[in-house]
Image 1 (cartoon, rainbow, N blue to C red):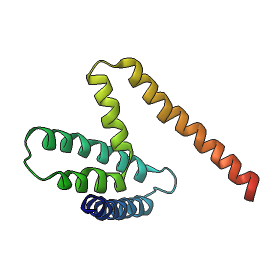
Image 2 (cartoon, rainbow, N blue to C red):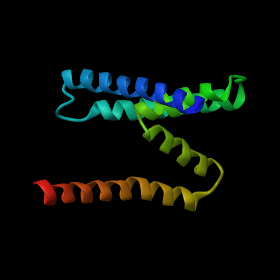
Image 3 (cartoon, rainbow, N blue to C red):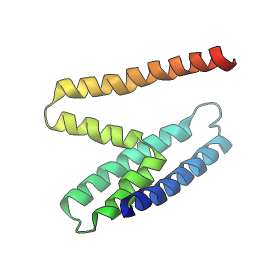
Image 4 (spheres, rainbow, N blue to C red):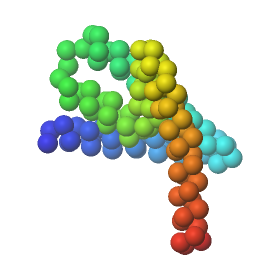
Length: 126
C-alpha cells in the first residue's frame, strides 16, 4: 500500500505540473500548436534518462523514492518518457525487431486507436 501512495502522490504532482506547463504554453501561442505537450514529452524523456542512470548506478535510496519520481511524477507528467526509456533499452541491447515493433505499436497503433476512438465517439455522440 505504501508504494501505491507514493505513486499516487507523485502522479498528482506530475499531472499538476503538466497542467501548469500546458496553461503557460497556451498563453504563448500553444493553442495553435500543442507545444506544451511536446515540451512535457521532451522534458519527461530527458528526466527519465537522468533518473534511470541515477537510480541504477549511484543511488542507495529506498525503492519508493524511485516510484515517487519516475512512476509517479514522470508518469503523471508524461507516459511518453517511459515509452522512450523502454524503446531505448531495446535499442541499447540490440533487440532491433522488438524495438521496431514497440515503436510501431505505440506510434502507429496509438494513432490508429486514437482515430478509431474519435470516430466511435462521433458515431455515438456526434
